[in-house]
Image (cartoon, rainbow, N blue to C red; front, side):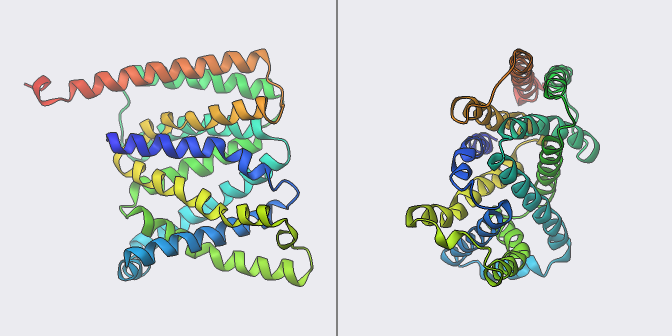
Length: 295
């Protein structure tokens, strides 16, 4: 569990900082950025599979229907999540993406209860209630239906559920997910080129190199997340996720100069109080399960 927690913390830290990375390409259409993100991720993970010499394992994965069908679903979920996130960051909705990822842990707890039969403790339910109150304040303060936030929360929440239920190595799982959508990305590349709508190849060399490296920036946290999802309870994984949107929120205010209201500050205090309550409750529950306490 300790290694899973470390992997989760690193993954969410990277995701929290990624708005700075995607903002570099704000002049590019979101769909074109997404196509590059998919293709370079595919090539990066394919390189890992080649180095590890795991092509036979990959073949076994893609020919196993019970494994392939959930991975098709998770591939579509994460692709939709990427597209919405990139569009939101490059169109001045960074705070709304932060709200979405604050919502996700609540979605995770509900999914864990209904699909995985996890049973949160009383303290953990108190934490969920506090976080829900904070998120509700955010939604009210936002002033309209936060479709970006809701879409990000649902897509990533269900993605985490699928990764939790499918018992597959992180590299093989991500390779299969990118393999499923890479043909669509290549076709879209062809469409952009034939229509003279592509903008990537006219970027300065430094920017083009950063775009190519988006494969590494995309795949690395997903690999870490997949490993974390296999060893951590889904509800705990969701609460660790607050690292990401908190970093994103700080970036939106300090770097992108988006405004933050008093109500928003109050809601974040509620959310972080929930984090503390959840952590303390989880520690007590873990101690209660130790062998010396079970006598």
